Image (tube, each protein chain N blue to C red):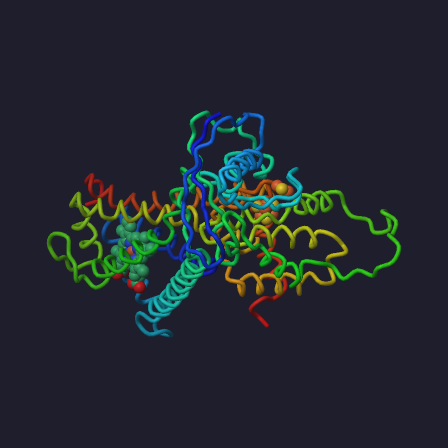
Length: 247
Length: 209
Ligand code: HEM
Ligand code: SF4
Ligand code: FES
């Protein structure tokens, strides 16, 4: 395959950055999107140019490191992570525009690499349970109804990639936050801190400069794990239950 | 936003019901217009209830617009560098129109108050009674057109607004619920748009005299 790539190049956090065009040939349809970028980088290095910086780790769709915006869509045209996207989703001769996640709480470090530690701060604010450590309890020690377990598991699929923020016209992290709140809130272990969690996480989210949700649904469309919009409504229900605004 | 929005929907349903009175004839409509000014008399002074409602609506409006502007501002600050390329065909057209559409509705409401509440603007001949003004206004095709455009804007705003309000109130808790909420938002928006547009069209077609 022959492709025209338009890639965001930015030398560092302070550099204003620019789009740069690269023509690439000999891309296999069976290669992944990141392997296509690897090929480009090999060619750039051979020419003595600076390779394009991008993030990745597992390359199997489970770690959440690899997201970029491809032709205006977070993680590209398929419902999957960038690392699991394959070049057969594109046509020979296509022009592909590649940009980093755009959100001020996710500043660009270099080229396509952004700093997503704002998500870690939201988790640190309340996205955990304070469990006694010790030997693992028996699986049936705390019974969980099947429906609750299923919903918790669905929400727990979130890999923290940030595509929801990247796709949201408001730059909101509500889908990510809603996923964590639903995941922990559906389980018995999540109950003691449930009220405090939702308040602390949403306050931290707003404080970090993420936008507010206007229920558009671009996030859930972009989410590689198919986290549904109802986790955001769950977060709002928990906020109301926690008496937010009344204290 | 959700609470004030739902108050507006309540107001719109009552207002729509009032407007439909004109189908019973101009006298019924004028009697209704008189009644909303005199409810509760003599316990409550003339227009007392009306003014309480007006102040309530105005307060809701201020809160509603203030929340919208705050969200708008936060969104701007959350993404100061824009994408070079937007997703082709992104978003529902009616959901994308919330901000500019909301402002357009606000302008319409001001126009509408100048038209039928203060009578500063008249379509055609000035008329002494509420029913007379409505009949005169909507016997002009362009009078009907202005209200059709406004009601389409209101319908679009409600279509996403009702959905959003249910989301914010925490009512969307499953995929099935999401479908039910979608259904209700389409139903209520349609009832309001159609209900408001029946009187103007009935007048234009000469069915109410
Ligand atoms: C075809 C559509 C509509 C018609 C025919 C209509 C008709 C009227 C009339 C005749 C009045 C004056 C009542 C009186 O003075 O006794 C009025 C008042 C009002 N209308 Fe409408 N209306 C329409 C749509 C709307 C919409 C969509 C809104 C808001 C989004 C709205 C908001 C108001 C408000 C706020 C008042 C003032 C109430 C008050 O007296 O404080 N109307 N309308
Ligand atoms: S909700 Fe989906 S899009 Fe958002 S961080 Fe989690 S996996 Fe990524
Ligand atoms: S590299 Fe881990 S999800 Fe893509």
